[in-house]
Image (cartoon, rainbow, N blue to C red; front, side, top):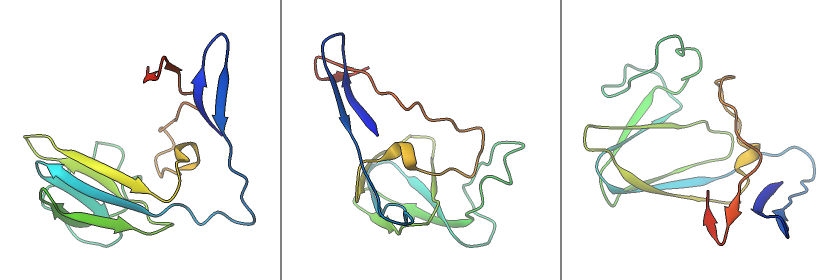
Length: 125
């Protein structure tokens, strides 16, 4: 369930019912500005990765891909990519098969998603 609008007068939610096991979503990441470092399944010693202290067990993908502006990558269902940027920051799009962020799984048990999104007058808050 994804809450789209929640005011004193109206509530709008998007609900998804799935049959069987959920394979996860397919997601395409397209970089617009700056360097975007995408980490996918694989081993190695990434050049740009900065894993937070004490979180080494959570950041399991070590295959590094550097996306310049205009480049993109598609992650298949079941993959658990993570992202970082360089000194200039970056701006990127995420296109996925379905908007169901509350169902996304994380390897870090410390990540807690809010299951409620408040939108007032069409502006997310």
